[in-house]
Image (tube, rainbow, N blue to C red; front, side, top):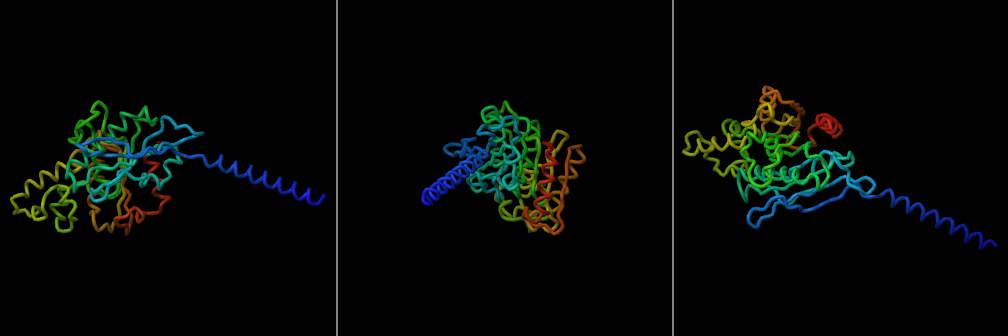
Length: 305
């Protein structure tokens, strides 16, 4: 009899464990659908790709949510698309947003304006396929750090002013509705004019010029300045530029804080909704620009979505 009771107790425990395991599995339904290596542009044999992360509810894609784009770029170098960068760290998918992680041609492969044209093409591709993937084509935000910030700023430019809107899907807009810029260079003219010695090598490589061209007595100086103006987001600010939030630290050793200040003032004068968050002691690293919670709060409040 005791053996029978022990057997029944074991069976009851086993049933409870199975039920608990079943419930745990039910609670571990995927929160998003990942679509990897989506080719958004082809240049010759070169395929340029992005990754998509679409939020799920009850196993189905949420429809009509905003799309948050992250530009996988450092020193205008980009390899493969990632996992959403800042948006992943800020729990965007848990909040119901769709996320795209976008790569571009590196400046070592194709200098300016190739990276700007690529990310603009990505926005047009994503907008063209909005119905297919389910997000809202009228609510796109972009975020990038450093060179990714520079490229993000180029996506705030209106279609009417942007020289980077070339290629496929020109029947839809290549402009985003909101820009989140982490310490991106905005005015290359000022960098080459005032900070030529401090400017890192990749900014010269991206512009396809040599460092000595930044000397006013160089035969290539005017050519450098013409390129700098062409590739500077600040050159295209008008009232139709996208609302922009800028984050930078006072001790950034790579991009002068004046870059963010100049862009902020230009946007403000144009009547564009803009916010500048300056972190005392912050360097060229998002983690140094105030607390995680503060950044999350300020950025999502700025989006107003």
